[in-house]
Image (cartoon, rainbow over all chains, first blue to last red; front, top):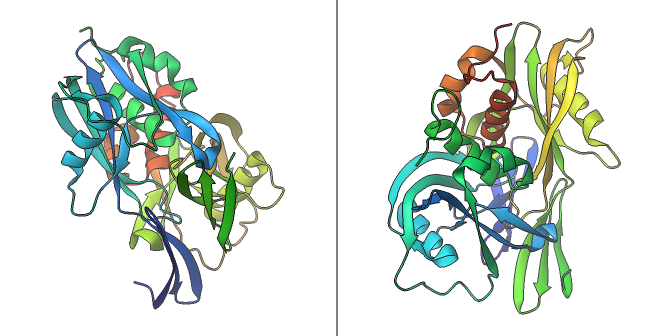
Length: 176
Length: 176
């Protein structure tokens, strides 16, 4: 644990602390944690979202994902975020893994779930007004060949892990 | 591009800006960019490093990696970081991909390289005094079964991608 810590900024999502660890000063971003989902719909598509990521000045294609709200557990957070961003509900949820996204300077821990067999809900909760999302569907059989289009790290890892966990011994995705 | 931006903190590695995009206020972490390496030594081991990541309060096992210095290109940065952290030099370097690590709030772009056939250099550049690194070697044939030990996102993605790109049609890693 640090010898001392000074909170310099507390924002809506992140905060920034400078911590002293022995003779080392560390700039550390606090984050509530997040959930990302590999959603597979009943037609055998992976469902992705494309949105403006202001930090990058670009629209990026990503797994549905979002931050934990205060007191929220990862699984309900994942179901809420998936419904908000894509309108998809239900399905069989599996916790795939949990990782630190950028441990060199940030405390964000991210839970990754597979959500297989999701389907459109009766009532689609409106997206947050500050989210302009485009929903993109890729047939599972095309994912391996299209990974080069992915520019987001969690999406690359999530899709690679899903393909690995759900592929047959020949490396192909099972027919549906 | 943002309508306005206010720099609130400029640190040694990261900075923090609050940007106004229309009616949305975004908290954005600036970062110089970074390089991560999947190094394979001449004995067929993947070489990883374990170090304290103060942000997480834990020692994590990761790919060698580090930030770009001012004016530094990704490939020389990767060779420098690998030598500093592991003493390994030479080898055949391949640019695997480039991704945003956490585009929801951070500008960090990361270049991923494979460095195959690396070997100990005659003179190991001393690690930075603030880095306490343990070098860990995993035989390539064990990597697939040990991915569950990885808690760092870039390391998970880098190893999965390497296994995929270098595996034979049965999904196994080629014998060396």
